[in-house]
Image (cartoon, rainbow, N blue to C red; front, side, top):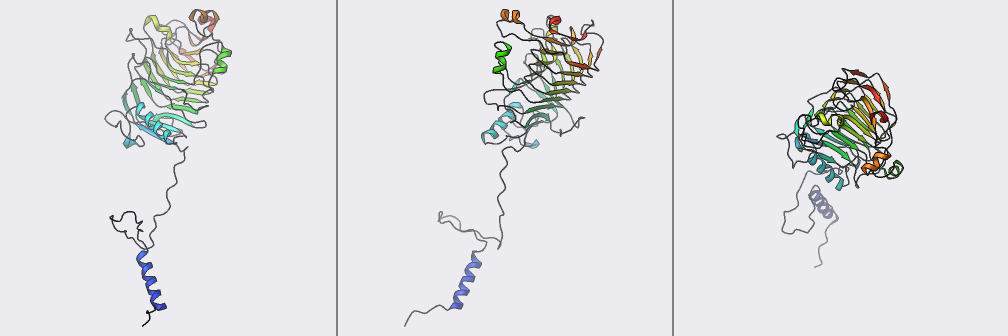
Length: 373
């Protein structure tokens, strides 16, 4: 007897049954013979397309909170997973950079409250066309009035300063912009510096060839910097600046308060509030300078196109509200350093000088370098 043939109808039934069993099953890849059997699922169920990878220039936020509200080993990527200090925030950004990410805006958000911190040098800049920000967790673009408690950074006069944003060999060329808003800094020797990089040796012409591309814009808005200097600790080094800007091509310092930036008597004249070096196009507008033992605004070495507008200078200044200073050729030889040049006289409008200088004597609104020396 010959082999029985399977009818066409039977083949159709078997094929339909096989398809029914296969739909929704996870296929077995044959690599784990002792593993679990294939899993089933609802017929026709789809997992959908995989999410798109985050663009490398997507904005990145890193959250920082005071001790007791933070975890030094946290991810830092949400308010519930905040790190504890600037060092922790910088580690998060560096880790993202190693993954080829964080090439867009970088925003460091601080919860309100007190931070006891030493000096930190921040070396990771935003890429050109993007912004590095240091702001409270409640800050949003366009925020003018505080919408929550300020982050308050407390130090000691033995600490050089709170924060320097500085260039190094890994910095992009050129760099992006910098924004600092709604923060309070108190108790350090100096305050905040944005250092666009400059080689100090040699003549102005030689330095011009070595200079890094300038920082395109720095915004300092609604910042409170107070109680800096060795006024209370005479053995500490003297303060020089509450806010220092170097190699900045455009900027704004506005609606901020600088108070009790002062040194002990022998060093009084060295403590300034805003100290600008090799910069241009900076406006200093609507600020309060109160009890600044040196000149509140000091320009040093080839600053240009500054605007000083509607500021209030109260019991501040050794010689002037705004002054220029530079190391000329003769002094440079004595100090064995590169010589400097004077700065342009800034445009000054609507400022008020109250109650004389720091010691109550007369100060003028502007004094050029020749008269300061």
